[in-house]
Image (cartoon, rainbow, N blue to C red; front, side, top):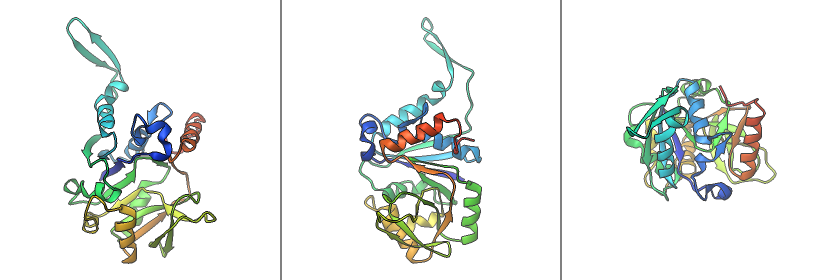
Length: 254
């Protein structure tokens, strides 16, 4: 099953880090959060990734191109101008990097990937969130609900918009409520290719155009996750994730 990761946003709320790099390349520990996400999906056997690039997408391309070298020791012969990779770690990943436009909205980014995803069910998430969600249980829930999309619902601080859920299906997306502690969209979704029928242009928001439309038709399911989930939405969030990484009790590390 292919995994789509949206990695094109500006990261304006963490601008201290994103002046020189895109948000998914902000480091947790010694690696970008994007690599943590790839490793997590890979731990469940999902190794075929499609990454939707946008703002500073060339940064991600360069990093992925050199990634095997970053993980390995190198022997450089300046006389013969050759480089030998030592103790190479063989990742089973197949990574497709697609430029989806700097100003494209989330739904538009997914729409631009349609030609890669026409046939089969696929996984989807955002390039700034970590969790210890059981992906196999998520997929089984999706099969049981028989919806076009099943998203992971999590409890989170009130800076996020909320979900109105009835019988494991999303009925409505609601505005942020400063006093609420409700279920929100945590990413980590399973999607059917029919999702592309609900996306029309670069301006489309995945959440407030496609998913809200699906919810009104009873086609948007939820998997409620009560374990660890954290979105790196600010410098404070980055510091919290780094503290968790340094504690050696890392929920998303397999």
